[in-house]
Image 1 (cartoon, protein in one colour):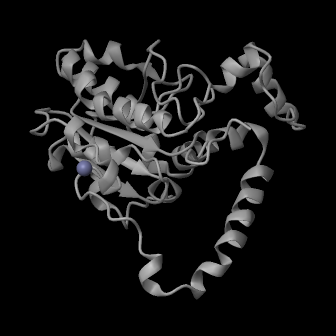
Image 2 (cartoon, protein in one colour; image 1 turned 45 degrees about the vertical axis):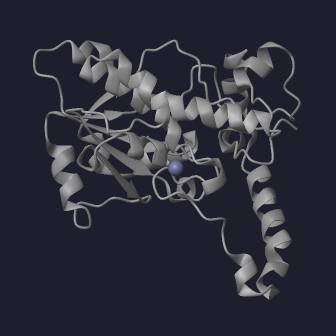
Length: 272
Ligand SMILES: [Zn+2]
């Protein structure tokens, strides 16, 4: 119900079970069936801006920094393939804010040492961190206080279940020190449902993490500016605010059937 036409909202699919996603994919396939018969010219995608990756009409470049931010931390964004094809993806905005040698995007599900020797070397470097929350994770603020600040951070871009799959099924990602953000800022990315109020999009995570590691508050502001512009544009054009699942449950507004799976149900109960 609260899923807008433009928003992916697949974080919701994880808690509600896989069925809705499958049904949606089926629906999409069917509605695309006739498209192949159209003349080629009419199938062309809307022209996209080469810098921000947005359609040219809604280019966000005026909200991007004129020059890439000067940072010493290098980010490796590990992007699930499904994330790349989303209409509202935030990683191109992050890439546009940073120098090319400080933000590398690798797309895939499996990252073996053989196929990704450079990534393997990065993972084996003791100064590399991986941002993935959990009981084993240290708060990034504590690490940033140490005299020799780490210089490389790996961030996984995908829904919660995609990120979990990538983190646990690739032994390379278990090598770097695991860190998490102990932040209480609410996600501003209101047009895509996040499981809890404090779940942040990849762009927001990167902005907060870089601010902490570089000890520079203005980084967060600069990186989040295009996201704020994107959200206000989408809202002005009919997208609906996506309250987090936590917000909906707490306020009795959750209108989807509760999951049958006991583990999933328990997780939902914890959000209340
Ligand atoms: Zn642009």
